[in-house]
Image (cartoon, rainbow, N blue to C red; front, side):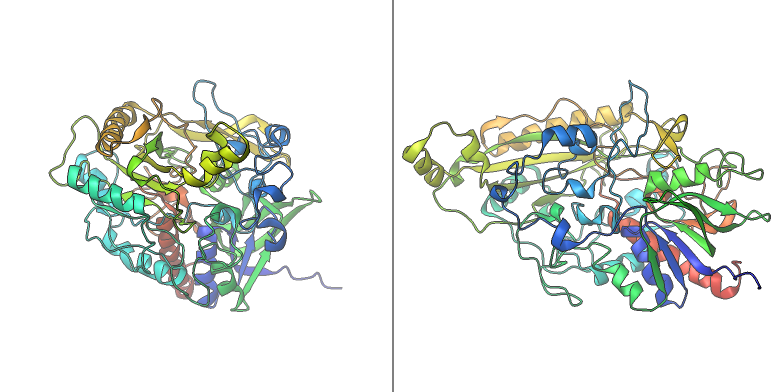
Length: 565
């Protein structure tokens, strides 16, 4: 009997989140056959989504089984979204170890499931500008991206039109407008903050730009304002890949999805090209291989880099894409100054506003923009926050019991204002990841060792951020004001890790070319945050999706020309 012919797909995509979903949609719609491998299981809304569950319906009233969280998720539980409602969206830390020096703590928040972290992301969807893409040309530090905002703009348009992003058009050079649905409405407190801050500082205060629908869009209903987006969304009224991009790929009939398939490395042939991937079945622990003409890594910045580092052979002894010795380096994550806020006395009342706005306010980067220069540091930061009435928090903090206590809870509703600042992390070679020589995960794959800390520039920027936040609090005349924290957030805490396989025109200083192809093996693409050259101070997800759409278009063109095997 003749041996069975192995199936070879046009492309394998590793990862099913924001990046992988977009690549799958674009490739399949262009006629390519795609196999997607996802390390985690699928999520079932009726079992896993909890946005409509009330605290009294849970065993621990929403606070969670602290012992179980501490034992199984000691790192993940530090994320604001990992609690009794949504801990299922986060990994078991014991199964997924990583290491770091004691003096350089790192917080790695991970979601392994079909959809990745798009179930519980904050949905903030901002465009970068040439203040990010061409930052080195402005201030002389580091490298520029190998393309400009003008080149990525059509892909931002494409992504926004498909997924739906609500926002207001402001005409700011440092934060380009998008193809927006109507913005979320401001609360009374946010309108007050907008008036005071704009009059006092001259900064534009706008509704946050979020991937929540404010109108029906592409067959999905508008947001119903339950305001628990980190717990999943039955109506798919915010972007997540299982509800938006993956169905588009599935409808082509050219898309296959394999869940619980943990990719450990890229399989390379004798010519130094990718032939497929090696993966391990998460439950059975059996080792398998899948084959394709092209491999796209979209597993998240550090996971994609981990796969490349682990793809070792005689031709690539230090991992595929590491001939420049740059792979793993230039790790970035935003840092935040948090904890600032207070009560707005003039808005305390016995009436409640309509509950549940999943977007607060945003103040774009203003420092080191135009004539507003601060020579103490490079790059800049932005603010976000919210002003709203609390539903339960004031009751927990108010002393008393009985009818008098209940009356005060009903009639003395405080109005809380909170604000934070988020700053840009410079790309530095000394911030890097490599493979730990001893520690492995539960499937025997070498774990990552992370070496990352914030430098002088970030600490100088943080000083200015604290000063600005303090002045904002003073301008609002808050009662019981709480000053901002006197420390930077832990590296990794903001879940915006980028870099480690950056793009560039020079193979000696970068891992990928301008179309996200690995310099050393052109039929391997990396499309997630690993490709970033700079990070800016804005959330990266919208840019990840735009870069993924652009890379997919280039991949299709190369494939049709016969330039890929």
